[in-house]
Image 1 (cartoon, rainbow, N blue to C red):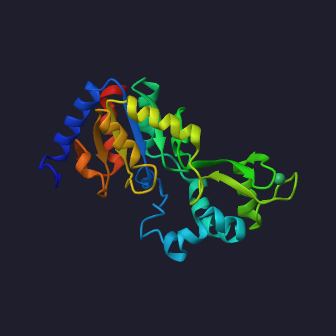
Image 2: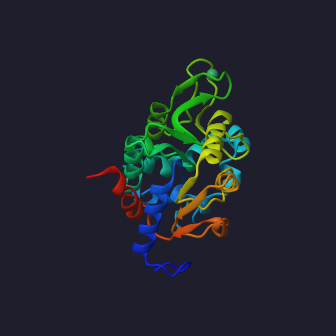
Length: 259
Ligand SMILES: [Zn+2]
């Protein structure tokens, strides 16, 4: 049963499917909760321990990266191992199927784990960046992120630029860095153009996530949240399905992708 509406999960799913059917432009925003069933902890949650070992504002900011890159890489190490071996779960796969069926243009995600692309989604707006590429902070030469990180996992040494010896940083957005302008522009465009936004596994606490459903709502879109936890924006939602995304998303998409 849903605490919010008193409707059973089955009725909620049925109503959400009807909303999807009515929609002419669907936008999807995903956060950490879509990847926890793939074994990647929500690194903002208490259980993961990642945030507990170190103050994130200390270790995961661009200022401290520049001062102590070794501390950053060592902090990231357990998460990197999990991300590199993680497989997409049924929620990622459902969204990829929706794209290939033409029902969804693009996924907007806060995640840096690359699982939407691994699942087969082609159009993914990664608003917090990604690990596929890395950049020298000194001369801005770009490198293949994956091989840089594999080398780091093997040697434990901070990746250095082959051109100038500068420190190389994965293209993920650290605290204190600007969000990628072009990606954000595309995400905002989706938010104002859509008439239905599905928010999956995002607590909507980390900027700019909260702004997107707010923009969508103001532009007249309906909002469906699929989340295990509550969000500061729950009062905006037209429907809240408090359940595991890996269970719910295949049920939402099944009527559209056929079997
Ligand atoms: Zn360089």
